[in-house]
Length: 304
Image (cartoon, rainbow, N blue to C red):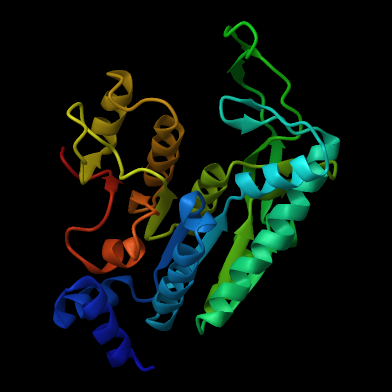
């Protein structure tokens, strides 16, 4: 399928004029778009197939998608099968030495290669990587205050081999992208003493997007986007507005770390960060190729 046919196909999918789509193709030509892939979008077979097709479309139009994926439910399922107990603190899996081996096996193995295979089936060309490959993600142990699940008091808790990126080497990502392949990256990092760290996929995606100076980062979630106090979707907000919404407790719960990731990436030079409902088919195409977009976009120069 040539470029003209692909644009016609997108036009039918999105009910958008071909001329408008061509304008966005030009804007994003040779630009990096980092996409965090997880949640319902990854667990639903039909949505997973659509995701692979959409990513392949981006690559064939000369856009450079970089995928960082999660895999919490699959990790949990494997731990259950192996009868290994697992618990969470503030949404982060407590990861001991035994657990981190399973995490790496599932993320870097079955999940990563399944995504690669789906993209190949859709007609694209992808390569699976983990943050340990070519020293992509140097990580350190996450040391922060968490709510003690027994007392609900904030204190410093040891949650094991859960890491935060401290340095990203994007060399291999650029090499893969520049050779017309799609990097699929599992959020597993390495420590300075050879440790393996489980890293939150949103956090890893943000750090990688910042290092690549990406045109955009898209976080696929299981919600529509950021909602106002009347529970209506907000299409665009500035960095300052997003910060005030957290302080005013309009943005709460699990949305806070996602917004903070968006803020950090935008402030580091990424042009825009978007929280997208991964449950909506072709949400990625709608975000890239239409004026209205999809979900909530956060950017420095909006709404000031």
